[in-house]
Amino acid sequence: MVDAVNSVAPSPAVKKKRYWPPELNALIGLIGIAIIFEILGWIVRDQSFFGNITRLKIMILQVSIIGIIAIGVTQVIITGGIDLSSGSVVGATAMIAMSFAQVGTYDKAIFLEQGWVDLPVFIPIIIGLACGLFAGMINGLLIAYTKIPPFIATLGMMVSARGVAKWWTRGQPVSFPTESFASLGEGMTPVYIFIAIAILFHLILTHTVYGKHTYAIGSNPDAARMSGINVERHLVLVYAIAGLLAGLAAMVLAARGLTAQSGMGVMYELDAIAMTVIGGVSLAGGRGSIIGTAIGMLIFGIIISGFTFIRLDAFYQEMIKGAVIVGAVVADVYRQKKRATES
Image (cartoon, helix red, strand yellow):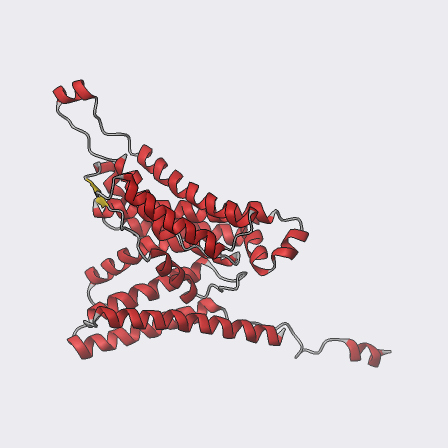
């Protein structure tokens, strides 16, 4: 009897295999890339890449705004979707929100005649968030209830939102916001906003029902639906959050530059997707984390700033950046195949 029990009992070697976290791969990549650019800095320019604090601050500021978008895109990709509209939503939202954040006149005679006055800062902020939320909800409704592929639905929104950005002021830039609105982009404020948003959604994805449903839908939408999850409603929520964060990023970007232009946010959607993929978020859905996206954001920032530091021509930068993105996707596909064969 003992032999029979021992024959069916799992041996110590037959245990659930522990996989190497993709976030750890991203962290190792971050350290490796940082070392490479530090060495290249001494070789090419005879100075340290990380020794200049001002350069590092500029680098973090450059990618933190796109990082806010990437947090929303991360959640979309975890569900197995994609969002190509976030850059255009940034352009449209920046134009609309900035038009409600204009400096009014303080001349008493003109004020009494025309009634111009600075609007409270919460009004353009609410309007900007509402614009992003609306665009995200349209994406989600199209994808969830008409079954249009996310690529097509968000591509349509990308074109439409860019058209709205140009139509809102007939292509004219909108500048001179109020001081309170401009404070959204002052100093290191964009970085603080990114950190706060990243911590918030890391906790939401890892400790709430929303997070569990997001991963479940990305892993197997049919199984998620059979387990009682309202997949359609959840997808609308995920895309609405992505649009909301794109709207927030738009206002931070406009406040930092003290202007809004219809061409703002071009290619931001691809940069945000690149950050998530480099950070280990699987394009197949069901896997990824905000921590990985944050690491991917830093890698992205170091690559861009590092190429500029060593004075590499812009077209070479685009080529290498594209190769890094493709390499990250190939690594993800290889990782998925390896898991499938081992499971």
